[in-house]
Amino acid sequence: MKKRRYKFFLAFFVFFELIVIILLGKSLYEKRNNVLGASVVVEPLNKDDLIFANQEDLEHFFEPKPNRTIVPKNPLLHYHLESQTINADSLNERYNYAIEKAPDTFRIITLGDSYTYGLYMQTKDNYPEQLEDMLQKLQCKGIKKFEVINLGFGGYDIQYEVKRFEKRGEKYNPDLVLWFLKNDDFGQIAEVMNKKLAAYKKEMIESEDMDEYYKEGKFTPWGGKVTKELLQSFGEKQLLDYQKNALHKIDTYYKRKLLIFSFSSLKKQYKNVIEDFVKSRSDSYFYDNLVDIYSMGESLPNDKHPTAAGYALIAEDIFKYLTANNLISCN
Image 1: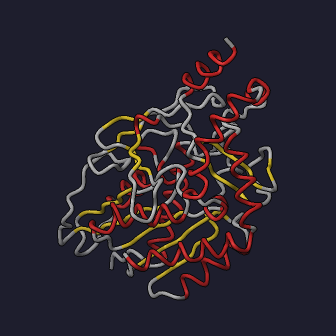
Image 2: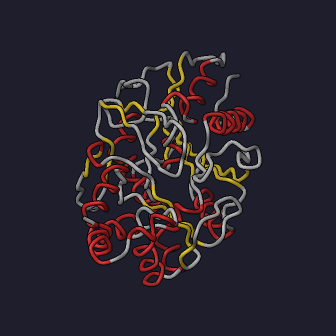
């Protein structure tokens, strides 16, 4: 009966155990139980909504299935969660975009994890969609239309974000790429972790008292176990070197205008990596003072993802940066 009850509990919340975000060190805004200084967050998505697209270089890479609606679930959030529409190209978008770009169109690709995807908000409310709507109001010579195409997805690390661009973004021939990176993007290696999560889940459900974990709000404790193992086996320096290499792989597929942006709480060693990267390529920029949605109360309780209003603040901040620094010129 006890095992049956555990299985029912897990099935009810439909947690997607492969999505684990790791934060190395303390964060000003994310207050959770730490394992060796890494805060673990689990993002709930239904496996039926995902494609496990085995690649030659990435065995465990995943994407949302196209042409469907996704409704996330999270028992830590006590309010109605919004749905997202996944378009024909596996993107959290209101529209399907033509592969061939019209001559009078300025096209932007956004890369990132669940903060770019817009995990708990309606598709229209994520920051790429709101940015697209703001840009449409510009009167620019030679530009009749702006397109902001969202490649973000929850649980992605830097390597998976580059793979997503290779698979879905390169063909759109963007004029600009916006890449939202945070502390946790530098602290995880999804491909390494995902190999072990399923086995650890089975082992812990069968052998441990899961009720104690549930009372603590830890609905996928196997994520904490694999996190601890990752940090012990890699160490911070080796992990950082890994992320440096992953970051530079974007140059294989894209060499044009690029803006990487983050919150001011980004760790100094991560800022240094990004600064060195943007210096190594032309037409590249780094904005590390993104609007503080947390002090404004525009993040979700017990989760810290942005609210719809939080995404509006992010979109407005990026809009101002793009226009002020002539990344989009309307002269």
